[in-house]
Image (cartoon, rainbow, N blue to C red; front, side):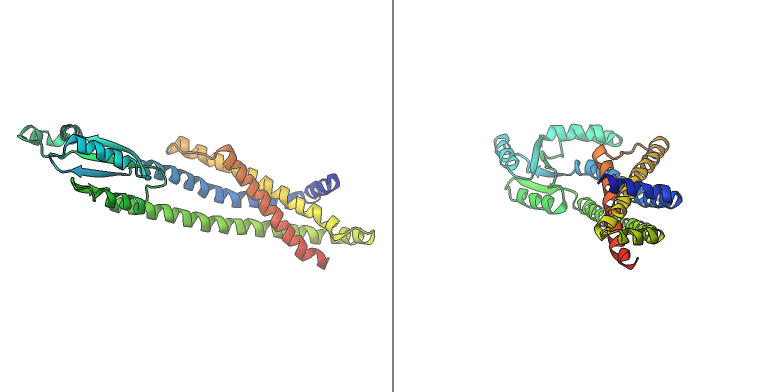
Length: 285
């Protein structure tokens, strides 16, 4: 293993320009992938904040006894999708409207009776805030006999679902495209290295070296280049994150584990591409 690692590192000395070019190219390919991952990360964070506002409002028929409402709250809290239930009385609804609709203060002062009904505000658990689950809960709530209306903003919940799906598909496509590009770059680099060392490989075969022994340094070489490219990508992503956070808006960066996954991705891509390239070109040397 020590000999394999030494031979792999010697490739950097034999072809420093080619090695630097390969690492830089891999780094920029993963950098673009990392940039989109940062966008997806911040978009997911924003969507999570929006999802927290998803709730179903159940308006009650006037005159519904408090005892009936209390029993209903217990039943609703037993729903597997429900996180919490908040009872808003008619007086509380009017006071909230006065605070939020300041421009209609004159109308509120002229009121002789409270026109707003009492309601139950139902918040759902994470994982149940998509349109399918919200609609299912709303339909179940409509079955209570003292319910006047049930609302949950169907249109914007469905738009939130579509935005989440689009972000997932685009992330998958772009990630696959840049992973393929990085693998092609590494494979080309290993191919050039194999061809450049064709005489050395021929001599090694003459003295009894097996194909496995010859292949290992190239595979390790590709893995090292992929890992270094991943490190470079993380550094570039951090620089972009600092520019955005200081100049435009506060953003989120990768956790240590997520940054390590980018480096690991580069390593795996380098390992896979180099193994495929060596397996294809070594028999021809």
